[in-house]
Structures are given as structure tokens and as C-alpha cells.
Image (cartoon, rainbow, N blue to C red; front, top):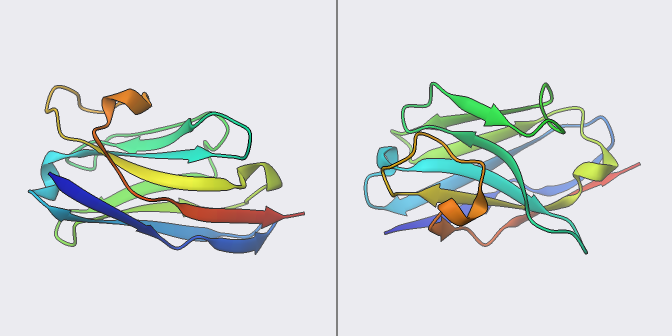
Length: 126
């Protein structure tokens, strides 16, 4: 089992940047595929980005492609989501999630992730 804690959220103006961190504890971190999802008020949770176990494959939602990057430091048990050129529509609670099934190299689907953090609020003002 793995525990996930997100940090780095906050209030930023449109066009600004934030870096979210997802710190993990528990079993071997490098075994897990990690994903970032977000949920805005009144909307369903949506996929943002994912990174495979080795950190050499990443995938992004079209809405954030070119603006967000995802990386991981397995030695520090941490995944980062660097967000640039933020827009008001990026406002949401951001969650990191871990897939420990070992059957997938990545996943864009929330139900494939077994472990979730508590979320961190990102608010982008116009």
C-alpha cells in the first residue's frame, strides 16, 4: 500500500506557474504508475497527466498539453506536476493517484488507480 500527499497548490494569476508535488510513502514507489487528475466545482474528475514507472513515458490531456509537464524522482518518492501559462479554467482540486496493479505502463482512467491523495486546491484568477 502507498500513501500520497499533494502539496504546492495555491492562488495564482492567469499566465502564472505552479509546481505541484506528490509525495509517497509505503511500498516501493518506483513500482507505481502515477497520475494527476483534477476536479472543478460541479464537474467530474478529469485526467490531467500520467507518468510510467521508469519516468520515461508521459501523457497529457489535450487541455494541458504544452503547458504542463510531469516528472518523477523515484529516489525521493515524489512526482511533480509543473504547470505554466495557467488559465482560469485550470482552477480545480488536483489529485495524484497511484496504480500498483503492475498490469499497465500508464493509464488515463481514474478507476485504474487504487490509491489517491487528499488533493490540493489550485485557483487561477483572471
